[in-house]
Image 1 (spheres, rainbow, N blue to C red):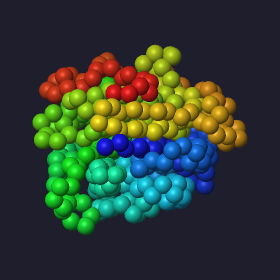
Image 2 (cartoon, helix red, strand yellow; image 1 turned 180 degrees about the vertical axis):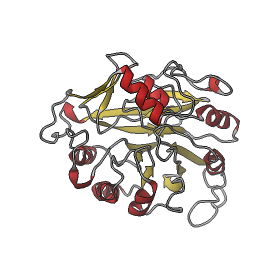
Image 3 (tube, rainbow, N blue to C red; image 1 turned 135 degrees about the vertical axis):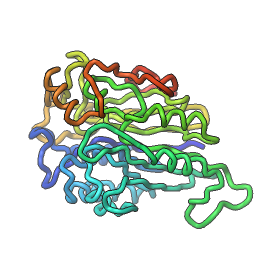
Image 4 (cartoon, one colour; image 1 turned 90 degrees about the horizontal axis):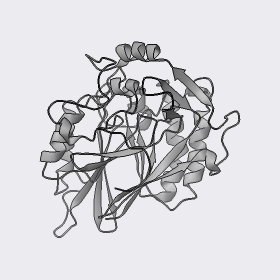
Length: 336
């Protein structure tokens, strides 16, 4: 059941190649990432786990699709898109030809076969329009239906033939069901992660892995025993040196390849500034992009955070189902 996934996240593209925070050529970074990934062993699928756009313009989504298309075609790999808190559903849905009504959550199912193994990618929409925190709501039931569909009823071409291999699945979200690395990300975390974890524990079949982004920092953990892999961001990297009360980031861009086998889930990270590709001009590796003070973090959290959030809230969850979630954010690229 070996599967290789190119995992990109938080590209934060802008129309007309406008720089992110007025400094970072995210369009050039995506081009560099694709060029670098193209030199690696082929992957079976390409996952983009949200915040594709920074400004919600149709042009930003079209650029993402056109930039990834040649690599996807060469690998014969589908591109799976998840909606993030910076994305706009209507523009994203139209530009990327995704199913559903313009303003509905973007939920998609993509089935592939790798050797004799059948894989299903379930991309759910954890975004809340106009806010920064995550919420799945009734989509949790749709996720359950998709990942527990062991007979493959959604498979293109009809039900599987007798003796066909069981269906494995990958759940793709923007907001990870893991503890947050900073106070601001605590305000913007996945609000109903404990409920998702309760589902993962009780379902007849669980996903092989959950892929997510949002934190702009690679990490890993588990939700009800299911491996959760948080991809690094292409736009910038969250820094923790000032303490969790601050929200700061530096110019560091990366993508990962996630390899799934019967024995483990491995995340291998490639940092562009480590010589894998030429960075766009004007980007100084490690340069601080922004630093929000604790007071600024509180203001942003109250404006964009989950209802009832307080800056004194723990970064981990409490209440029903919280025991199923790891209460630390573990950075690194080791296997699980």
